[in-house]
Length: 101
Image 1 (spheres, rainbow, N blue to C red):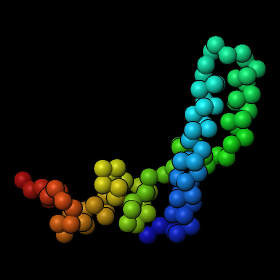
Image 2 (image 1 turned 30 degrees about the horizontal axis):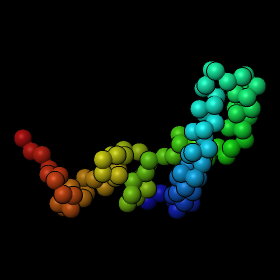
Image 3 (image 1 turned 120 degrees about the horizontal axis):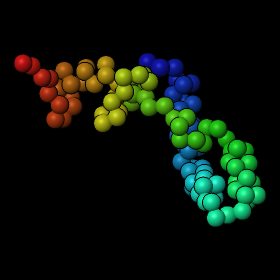
């Protein structure tokens, strides 16, 4: 199990990303628009730099819903490989069967 402070930090980041997503998108649109004057684009770059780092989507880490494990993560199930194997072996994941050949 991951530390609870790590899990809480990731939850806080997800919440911040969600709240600041529209502002970041507007600023990035201004920055990438070549028709605008350079001063206006540079001002948008400065505003984007002033925003909190944790409002960037790339700072989010995918973690297992059960254990909080950051590695070996399956997006389809929102679980780590270890939790996925345990649940699949017990038959608690619908549509997942253990293969044998």
